[in-house]
Length: 600
Image 1 (cartoon, rainbow, N blue to C red):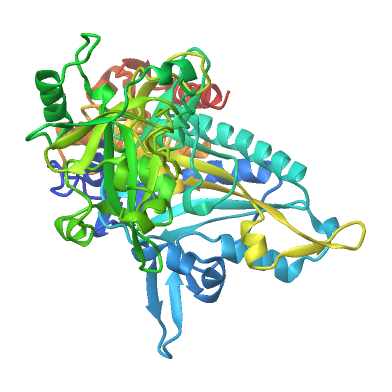
Image 2: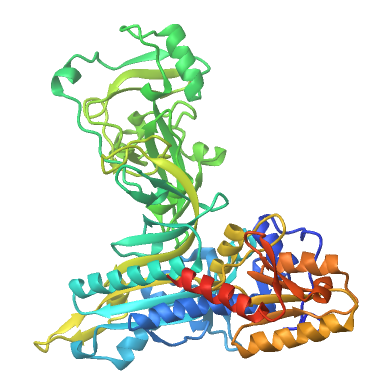
């Protein structure tokens, strides 16, 4: 890879559309180039890194018995119609028609195709268990593609699927994939955490995500240091608060409505409560004493809409991602003025449980489904809206004075909240989703009638697992995690080359020696980037070497007259001079020594 002929152009300025450091450097260093919003071309150096990631993934999948195949990206509508995902994916699905008007799509994921392939070819339990995988381009019409390769409309993913006749077999396949993923992400070289996850529209039971720990990550996760519990924030299950003792409930006064003028917010309600209706025990009212009722409008994949009311303590807000996970595949938005006009019994800013709940429809209530946060305990007393402007009701007790239609895990999770396992408190961090493993069960097999004959000759439905790795996303995640102020710093297993040889100056002897060195290194099986550009200054060559991020840099220059060359470690910045005769040996030691350390 000679820089004089390599299809490469490095940039000194950050691209205008890049927000994150790693994204900026991948473009500046000539690894990728933007083709359209959320769509990128892979240039020669970038493609080499991508292929290295694919190689790691492929080796570990083959090691657990996975068999690779490749489905088309252009797919028919019918299988996705059968599973409901033609509708459920909503606007995220790229839909198109061929010249005959037949509906097709660009594949966002391939559960349906894998299921149908096995159905077409296998019919007996003797042919299972089976693991199939592919590394292929996927398409999702993201509303707001951002962060370069991290959230694009076109991306490369490894998806694999296990097929078994029993739940026990699925458990074993899931465990094998989990261990393979640990090896994959250990080799990719970034800090990651395994968290409980929500299955979302994929369905299924057991579900875990592998998150690259990063402050720029879009996913929030929680950890409990005491127990090791970790979960994506959407998957945190807040336990149901225990019911208040009956003797305590008996002592709570009857609910009473009070004037609370100009108090449509929790803060103003607390102020009015303390000023006009102080507590009998002398303790001031706080947001924790209030019950906030939030109404949102759900839109289902078929276009139908319905309102949903969520009751939660006033010191908490609804977490958008947690709510999305709970209502998927529906989407939601806040209630707007037109919505309130359609439900005149809802007093904006003063909504209370009195008009909420499906059972209120026949008694003049809204009939809106009403779900409570699990922290709202049976027998607990609240200050909440009285369904009349300027009025709130005090000492309203759940179970005595109002009921709900169920519970929902949609309230925000905060630093210091108790861990669901009861072992300590939670800390919050951010991460980039790199892998997700699901126990799909029989959802897709049932929808597409994938059955095999068991040992008794009876047809049984196959049970499946689904396991994904973001291959192109891994390139971006590594770039975000390993760069410095000078440029990219690739881990050796993913670097586009083992060594970057830089020839500096105008002395022909320098270029002749560098040529010989490159030939010797390549003869030893190393991949070399060689900066042989004759009219480029040493300063520019050094900056490009740092920007490209190859782990070992060898400089052949003015030291040649003294019989030495310089070897620089890109990550640590350490430099040392070695004699000409020892150069190849020293480079091999550094490359193969660090490779062995990385692999171990």
